[in-house]
Length: 212
View 1 (cartoon, rainbow, N blue to C red):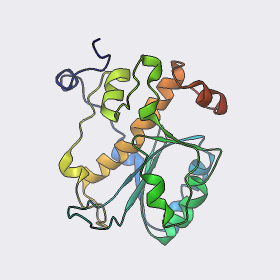
View 2 (cartoon, rainbow, N blue to C red):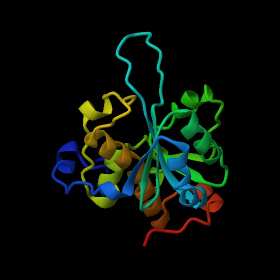
View 3 (cartoon, one colour):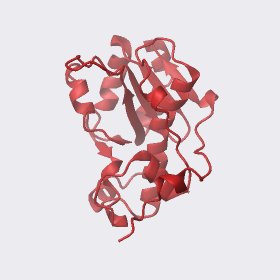
View 4 (tube, rainbow, N blue to C red):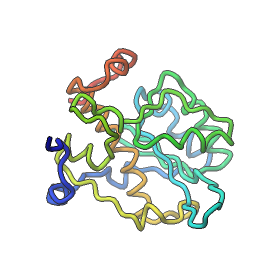
């Protein structure tokens, strides 16, 4: 049976994914910067979630990440440089049972946060939310966007494997990191609008508004 997912070649012919513009992407390093956005983040019912870590290239090398934690709403993306202050601010959000955090490939994130004694709660890996389409294997972010929105989410391996521990992120890193948290919000909202979310998710998150 032919897959419902578009081919790599057909995806490359689609219009490019429209990311948030620069004025709606915030890089946060201090408590003061974090608290200036506390109201929106604490009141958000739904947040896109992702992390970035400096890659390891040597066998047996210890992973020191995450070095960047991304959260996003439909309007803004927040890039938190990991330090004691930002972790202090993020702890109640990441551990909040009432706020749903959505993303792709979240399997390893719980392990990364154990060293900070942060238990991630109400995390939803969207890769597993496409069974209603007849897809029983995990779906990646690029395929999900192509399937739902007919857009090409262009990923750069050079950027994904760049140094995320750098305190001065490049423009390309900033755009990449913001998109990885922002896109899952769009995908969740569209699945919710289409009534395609797993029943258990729809019932437990009935307060979520659908994207118009």
